[in-house]
Every structure is written in C-alpha cells, then in structure tokens.
Image (cartoon, rainbow, N blue to C red; front, side, top):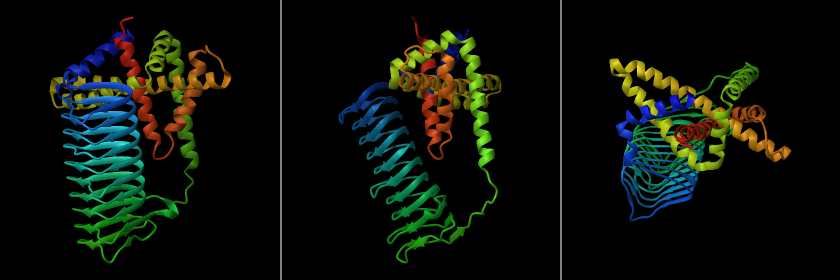
Amino acid sequence: MIKKIAIISLFLALFLAPVYSLKAAGAKSSETIYIPKEEIVSGNLYAAGGTITIDGTVSGDLIVAAQSIIVNGRVEGDIIAASQDITINGDVGGNIRIAGNSLTINGSVARNVNAFGANIVLGTDSQIGWDAYLVGSNLSVRGIIDGGLGGHAGQALITGKIGKNIDLKLTGGTNQKLTVASGAIVNGDIKYTSATAASISSEASVAGSVRQITPEVKTKNNFWPWMWGRLFSIFAAIAVGLVLTTVCKKCLNKTVGLIEEKKARVLIPGLIFFFIVPPVALVLMFTIIGIPLALILGAIWLIAAYIAKILTAILLGKVLIEKILKKESLSLTWSMVPGVIVCWLLFSVPFVGWIFGLIAVWLGLGGLWLYATDKS
C-alpha cells in the first residue's frame, strides 16, 4: 500500500507539472560531472556529484547538488544549487538561489539573487538585474545590483553600486560591522540594524538617508525554551521513527539500502520531487476543482519530507554504529535512535543547520523515489 501511494504521488507531481517536464531535462549523477564549452543542454539539467563544472550552455534551469560547483557557461533559466563551494562566472538568464559555505558570483544575473552561506562575494564583474538577498557571516558586494540589497550578515563590505535601498541586519556580536567603502554608490537609502555604527567613507556616494536601528538588549534567558524545543523535536522524531521501524520494517530496510548503495545519485530524484510538488500544489489551488488535490498533494509532500529526514537519520546511525562498534548487522531501531539525535542536533546549528536539513530531505526523498520505482 505504501509503495502504491508513493508511486501515485510521484506520478501526479510529474504529470501535473509540464513546466518542469522531465522529458526536456537532463539528469546526471557521477563523482565528476563536466559539460564542455561546445555542449548545449536542451531543457533543465539536474545533477549531483562530487564536482560539477558547467562550461557549456543550459537552455533551461540548472538544479545541482555537489561538494564543488563551478558555472562558467550560460544558464538561460534559474540556478538552484547547494554545495560547499559555488562559483558562478557565467551569465544567468533567470534567478540564482544557492546555499553553501563559500559562494562567489562574478557574472551577470538577469533577475534576483538569494544566497545563504558563510562567505558570500559578488565580484567586481557581477551585475544583478533585480534585487539581492544575502544571508551569511561575511558579505562582500563589489559589483552592481540594479535593485536593492537586503539580508542578514555578521560583517558586510560594500564597494560596488546599489541601484536602490540597502536594508541589512547585522548579527555578528561585537564584530558586526557595515562598511561602505570609497567609490561605492548607493542610489537610495541605507537602513541597517546593528549595535555598531556603520563606517561610511566620505568618498562614497549615498543618494538617500542613512538610518541605524539599535537592536533591543534582551535580558531574558532563551536557552531553556530553545533546549526544550530541541528535545521535544528529537523525541517526536524518535516516536515517529519507532512507529515506522515497526510497521514498515521491510520497506525502510530496502529504502535505506538503496540510499547507501546509490549515494550521491539519490539526490537527483530527491531534488526533482522536492522542487516540483510545491509549485504544482500552488497552481492547483487557483482552480476550484484542484483545491482538494492540492491539499492532498501538499500533505503527501510534507509527510514524505519528514519521513525522508528519518530515513537519512537511520542511514547515519547505521554508519556511525558500524564505525564505532564495528558491527555489520544492526536493527533499524538501534540505527534510528542515535541517527535522529545526531541529525536533529545538526539541523539546530545556527545559519547552516537548515542546509543539513535540506540535504537529509533530498537524500530521503530520493530513496523513496528509488523504492517506489524499483522493479525487483
């Protein structure tokens, strides 16, 4: 029954989304993926691997996950990527939505940029057609943003040109600092939230006003509410995991085995399912007869995403116990409990925890996809 539901839900997600048609999309999975300069990928490109380098052209969207991603060619659509290091030197005809540790953009982007990472750099050759929303420890904006700049940062350096307003929240403790250097141009207002006054060079051009918002000093201790929240989420996940390992033992064993066997290749179907279902449900909400189906599809997506994280936790627990205790065969329950604890603690890490959560969801969804479509 579970397998049939998974197959039906995946089929509906793909069938009802012609905009994301897989027939027009390339799907690649390997330790090293390379698209040469002369190659043109027709439609969307989904890829997962250790290192991904795009020197050619992608006529649709580029949706990738890897340890290192370099885009030197042109992407006609959007770029959606998650990686430790991402460098985009080519031109992008749509939006950029990326997450990772070190993120660098040196090319032109026709629309918006949403970047989440530790170090984010918009190089001197970068040009953003619309707005940029950046969240990171260190931001460096050296290029041109035709729209506005917003986001959160520990430290932010502006040396380029901002076409509209700047609205930044600085959360780096005593090291938080906004610097608008010599030669910078801001054709709008600067509003920033920080306990430290910004350093604005007299040789910088600011067309509008400069406003500092001093954050309120919170004396209330939020540690225990945070801790109880984390403990509750861990125990809730363990409770769900116990039910799953009891009722669906055979299914979970096979799915976890497929994730372990396929490794990075599991990310591709996981990414597809993760990004296709929400817009499909949203489109269906605008049609009266499609509202019930949209609600069902949305519920399936949320349930599948939660189960996916538990599947990844089981795999992680299995690997950890095999490495520590040197045991080959373990029950799902013994693998699930330590895996959930470690995973949910990783999900709680500030700034980057949500990245771990996304990767866990993609891996688990990919495993569910492989299980649903497995013919053996």
